[in-house]
Length: 216
Image (tube, rainbow, N blue to C red; front, top):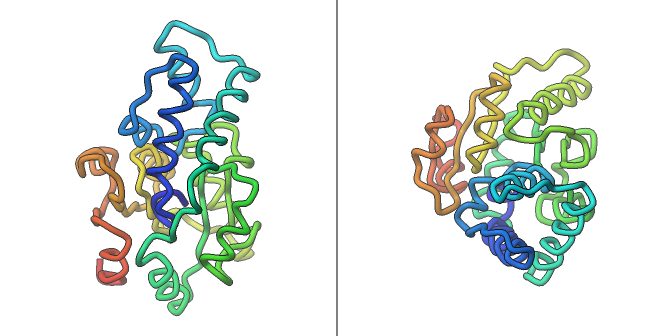
């Protein structure tokens, strides 16, 4: 969702940087992009271990609450240019759209329905509330295949799908689930960070992907 459907990652990166600084952790905005897709607890665990500390669940919950408070100060993020047009192209071809996101925002569905009407529903979504491991583990995308299978009434195979990802850890998770993956570099990271994780295609924006679809 973040960085693919909404231009929200700059807000997330800044919120992570400011919140972690309050707790004495060094997390640059650029590094926040490298952790995109992890659960909040997973990111905080890594930062704590780097400083020789152990992050308890209670500690991580408080840190994530502060991060969320910083994020809430920013205006609602704009939909990513080209994303809705791409979805409409796919829908016209009969492509089923599934959302696999690490976000655990309680207002997620309302945001999606406002920006992307008649696209997403709970039975076609995997969120941070659903998973135990999160990206870069393939669990979220395997769960997406399972949800797609339930909608179709038959097994949805990995080779029938394409993942659209903007985060290196998300690309790694999709590749580990054996799903062909399009990387869209909507952030500040070098292109090779996404292709090194195994992305089959690379585009500089959602609009560029929309313009190229379905001739990729």
